[in-house]
Length: 241
Image (cartoon, rainbow, N blue to C red; front, top):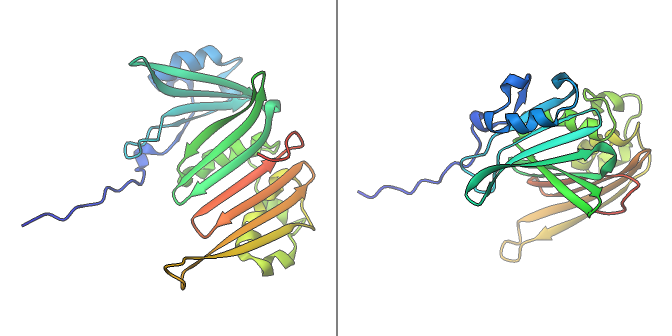
C-alpha cells in the first residue's frame, strides 16, 4: 500500500518565535561578543529581541536587534567562506526616511528605509505575527511615539471619518495605524479595483489603496484581498519608496 504524500507544515513553531532578551546573560552565545562591544552605556538603555531561524523556511535567517538612545543595532548570522560570521549594522533614528510593513498570511516584516553615505538602503526585520507585542513597540519608537503607544486609545479623542467606514470596512480598520504619524485625520484618498480571474469568472479579488496626510508624514496602505497588505509610513525626506 502506497503512502500518501504529506505536505510539510511550514508554519513556525513556538520555539521559532522571536523572544525578548532581558539581560546581557540571555544574549545567544554567537552574538554576545558583538552585542557587548556595541552597547554604549547600560544594557537596560536598550530593548533587545532575538529572532531564531525558521527550520522550514530556506529564506529565513536568525538575527538579534536592539534599540534605544536613538540607535538601532542589528546583528545577523551569515556564512562567509564557510565560516560563521556576524553581520553588524547601526542606524541612527534620524537616518530613517520611511518605514514599510509587508504582510502575507503568516509572514510579516518591517523594512527600514534609511540614508547613509552610500545612498538609500533597506534593512528587513522578518517576524511571526503572533509576537506583534515585541515589534509594535519598536515601530512606535521608530516613528517617534512612546513604545507603549496604542492607536486605538489615540483614536478616541480624534475619531476617523465615518465615510471611510462605509466605503471600506477593511481600510477603515487598518487606517488606525495612521495614528502613529499624528493625532487624527479628516481627509483621505481611497481607491479600489476588482480583479476577476479569466478561468474562474465567479472568483474575484478586491485591491484597495488608501492615502492619508498626517502631521508628521504620509500614511499609505495597499491591500490585495485578505492575504496581502503593505503599509507605508513616509516622512518628508522621501516622496515614494
